[in-house]
Amino acid sequence: MRLGVLDIGSNTVHLLVADAHPGGRPLATTSDKSVLRLMRYLEPDGSISREGAEAIVAAVRQAKLAAEREGVRELLATATSAMREATNGGDIIARVEDVLGQPLQVLGGADEARLTFLAIRRWFGWSAGQILMFDIGGGSLEVATGSEELPELAESVPLGAGRMTIEYLPDDPAGDAEIDALRSHAKTLLKPLAKQFRGLARPDFVVGSSKTIRSLAKLAGYAQPGWAGGERWRLPKAALGAWIPVLARIPADARQELPGITADRTFQITAGAVVLHEAMKALDVDELEVSPWALREGVMLRYIEEFGWEA
Image (cartoon, rainbow, N blue to C red; front, side):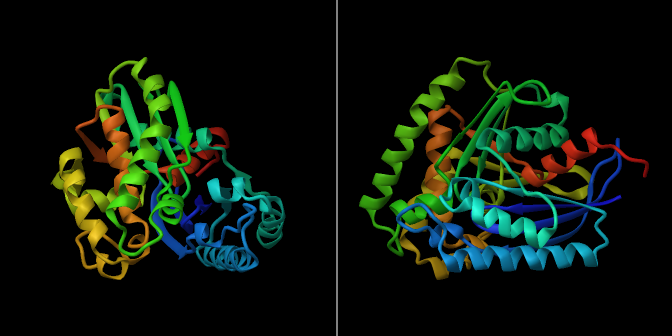
């Protein structure tokens, strides 16, 4: 069956299409993405502006047409932090459901973490042992750990790269005082989370997922030979920390000239680097490996498990 996952996130509206069947690995065929950066459209009262709402609806309409062209038989539509937190999120959700002709599943932060963890466990397998996961989106940071298929502990904190850019790094490029303020804020939010995670087993394997972490690994990390001729990217905390002052001095429109930094990440990559660095420090992580799979694959895998079909 051709399956589609539509992820309405804080930074993008992203459609992933894959051929999937029970017991098999989903094989991606198409990826269609619209860059929105919804945090730019937040009003003082916490609502998404009319312009932002129109951008969401237009992107969803485009994604639906792409899914139809690709012959998607089942479209799984989800939304994450920007939509669930907006004061007018209910109205926008209703408009999106009208365009799709089906319900939209709004995921809580812990649900995001669990589904992403599931995808990571499936990708790296049982031999990875106790996994600790970091995932940075536009609106939130998810952290989860466990030795089973689903995490023992899954938490979400509002430290997304887009949100932190808008709130703490509004100048381009950012100044030292702004970077220090973001570091302090991240430390404050991560302190109680770190206390929770320290009470559990030490991880055997630390993983980062999301486009932000992948970009940072290609900028500051290194690649090792992977499966089937691919590459496995690793990101040391020390190398990440060394790049933060460099990123902070470079204007956003010039960052895409750096290795691994794509045009849709230039705006928020500095904040993402600061948040990830502080998270790795808080949980005493020296290095992580990047997962090719994340939330969208987790949504797909959960659907296959719960609603299996004949191929």
